[in-house]
Image (tube, rainbow, N blue to C red; front, side, top):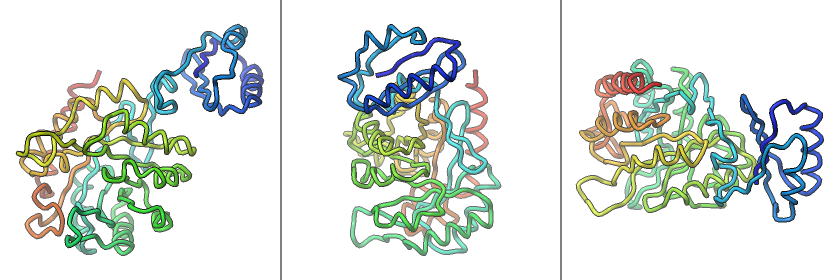
Amino acid sequence: MIAVLKKGTTQAQLDHLISWLRGQNLDVHISQGEEYTILGLIGSTGNVDMELLASLDIVESVKRVAEPYKQCSRQFHPNSTVITVGNAKIGGDHFCIIAGPCSVETEAQIIEVAQKVKAAGADLLRGGAFKPRTSPYDFQGLKDEGIALLLKAKKETGLPIVTEIMNANHLDLFADVDVIQVGARNMQNFDLLKELGKTNKPILLKRGLANTLKELLMSAEYIMSEGNQNIILCERGIRAFDTYSRNTLDLTAVPMLHELTHLPVIVDPSHATGMVRLVPPMALASAASGADGVMVEVHNDPMRALCDGAQSLKPEQFAVLARQMRTVREAIAP
């Protein structure tokens, strides 16, 4: 349920109303815009007398949020959420580029890639330390050593780091990680999502390869229900009939999610396509679709990469793409 307050409501009136609502065992989320203040009521709202609430002098309107994802809903929070990570902003009118290798392999590799993607215009550095792989015989990542190497690259370049978590038991290892990524396979690992909701770190939540947008938003709701509002949604392709590419990149998700939710939405064309020649056109299409950011894989030696070399750009290719994406964003700016 949301209550829209009239313009001119005083702080004392607002505090009194919030106190009354919390007295009915409701959590209250406050969203203040230029014209109106919106109160999002969370909890068992069935016992709230809507007519009584609507009759208050300071209340403009009251309505129930139909969607099961309450805190994610654009109705609940009309203004787009902007998440700050280091010097980068994600959401609203901001466009963020995240780049780096699929896997952290060596200190020399991750630092070289970090230096080159930063020089080319990347805002954040990505790199896998824990790697969920389809085959148990494939490279599984350097784990805690990989995080330590990412932190060295951060110290060297100043780029905030993004890396994936697979198990809530590893959460202590992520204390200095700037953005924790939840991969497609863990999108509905609800125990993990609830633990991440108890942190205050930005969470990059990837859509599962066979999940609907509603299911993605319900997963985000799990995190938000525990108190963490800092969520970045990521479209990374879904499984469809064609086998020419690894997945099918669903770019309709970007404008649709922007209608449904206030959370920022980014796109990962590397995992969506699985082929390096498809990454640039899909990255540019992602920027044109209004995505709040793009995450691409970059490796200094893709031919010898331990993971996903076939979809990894070389640093010089990324430099060209980064310029092109910025140009596209400038072209579509209102």
